[in-house]
Amino acid sequence: MDVSVIGKCTTPLCFLADGSLLCYHQRKVIVMRDGNKVKSISMPVSILERLFGWNRLASRLMRFGVRTAEAIDDNHAVLCVGHKLYEIDVEKGKVSDGWFCGNGIRPLIMSHINGIKSFEDGVYFGGYMVNREKNPISVYRRVGVDQWEVVFTFPEGEINHIHNVVQDKYRQCLWIFTGDFDESAAIWKATEGFAKVERVVCNNQKYRGCVVYALPEGLLYATDAPYAENYIYMMNPETFDVQSICPLHGSCIYGCQWNDEYVFSSTVEGDGRTAGCIRLFYNNKRRGAGIKDDYAHLYSGNPKDGFREIYKEKKDRLSFLFQFAVFKFPSGQNKTDVLYFQPMATRENDMRMMALKK
Image 1 (spheres, helix red, strand yellow):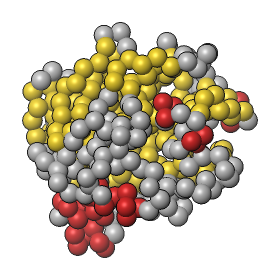
Image 2 (cartoon, one colour; image 1 turned 90 degrees about the vertical axis):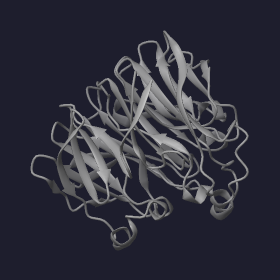
Image 3 (tube, rainbow, N blue to C red; image 1 turned 180 degrees about the vertical axis):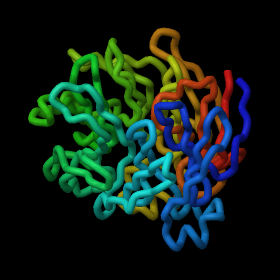
């Protein structure tokens, strides 16, 4: 494997249908085609980011930049900045006024749902926040520029938050993965345009996942369990039994599809069950029991050929307040021969955009 640096403080965001890659670098969205920069578009940012966004550690501490993104069509994408969603028109170089998700709410992962019976096509996301009180949490769908509607709400007491809403063209349904603790760690099956949402499994950390792929043979996903053993699993969509495919060195929050392979990143983080945020994020010496070492590991493969570790980097010395050690990827299927990713909170290539070639 050949790994090289593409740019400093650069986050790969998402692929458009024409193969263009959108990236974020110091208050600007960069449009890349065939590895070359073809356009840059200024993003609206906070005063704090204007003042301190040039500083790598301040960017990590304050969570500056675009947190997640999803393509809408060949020319438009949704970008999450803080708790606000903006839409970018690549051809015109324009950015919308934005839509506020709600106090403390943002998407962890956005999904493009298309061709699922009884569900409207569009970009969806589930509300993601700490929410230890288990207040109601909703699923949202984009209906127009800076316009989103609530399509389903988990009532009070059900879950902490939503990790991912996954379309399944083989079973013509949506799967909703929720977290984090006790019965909130669950997998739900949605049919009939959300008229029927049933919890199929719960109350075990092996059902706590973020990165999920619906395949003909079942649901391929990796667990996000900082205090339990982590694996890449395949879940039978009929019996809901899970089969472990590959052990992981830590919890998995990010991943992507790279041609016919599925990529997962392990995380270096704390236990996650402590009541106070300061205790959770400031302590850098106590990894969760499910985090095997101080490295973020990169895995790639498929159910047929198996999975292998292809890269790793060691976490830096800073506390978890400056983010967990992880690899981030652009959303959308990567059909190129290059795997783009960004190490975060690592010693060697922190916040650089990397390119890995087979």
